[in-house]
Length: 460
Image 1 (cartoon, rainbow, N blue to C red):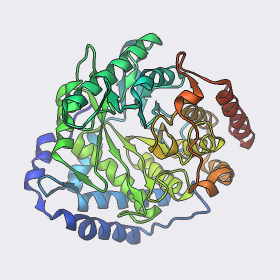
Image 2: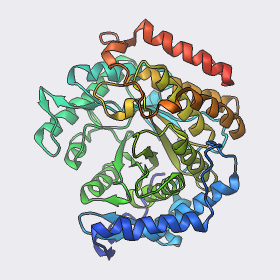
Image 3: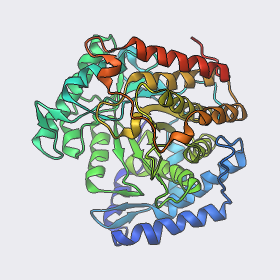
């Protein structure tokens, strides 16, 4: 079951809700409420414990997130109106939501289920380079990711050009780029024997027209795939984003709510980020009709989420949602370091460890802060997914995870500000075969063995 919650009753409020000047929404509506609920529910960040094992804290974060969403709502930048829901409506939406979905098609279909804290079920693994890529490398990189055995779903790299032209938003070139993007995905999936694999597509689309243009069960984005629809930071939307939500629901594919609360921005510190993650998840369910929420909280200065001030909110928000809902949500890693550096392997392993024990599914990995063209490979994602499977399989506790997290942080945290950018895809992989170079594989193997000695029991 994937029924949007009272779609037109809710969307009507983007025209009839309370009016607010956009310049007033964050400083006068959002930020004061964040501070209020943090104080009311006594939420306090502890840097010594990046993976708390405090169920009461998790439940308080849930209540604070609920209150934040209920009282702040979602601001439409086009109509200058605020969409709000009542307690009763939020409860009804949560009750009628499903805790599992079949995604993908045919033999490649996979059951995606809600996870609990310290769950022995492995996380659903969505691989994604999360970076722009040049046209000549797009197919090879897509193929490389689809060859990963633990992959449950793929979000392919973003095309910057198509037929030699820059992909410009809301132009014919965007539609052309989106078409090329999904064709590359379909061909690569067929070549590796996974024609029905689950796709999150297409990242090249910045405008609603680009997404709508590739909705096609024969050659494009199918009804067994999903789209990602962003919520503007913080707690804002637009008619273009709502258009995508409505299109997905009427076309019949799944959609996910994409959010990136900023540490050091309007959310404040770690406490505000944790509360906002919960609130954003309720927004995705109630307003976008999303089956999952895709979260990438990040540091205002670093642009990453692998340091302890971001790992803590990831941990407590995941536990809050795992204990108090049946929602699906993915933890999107943003590393400081780039490909083929030891640091990016440590960062990815740490992010996956914290997320997995806290009830998240995994979305790995945005290397080099997602800022540089062609700087991502499947190898950093691979180590994260293998950590996720290992941690679940050995039924690791939060206390055990916290000890290993502190060891991993010692390996890289001091270099967050000046992390190495690493190398580009074509320097780490053979473009023709879409396989890693021996140097790249050897580095991955070395770090994996080191992490195993810390207490992670890899099954292979």
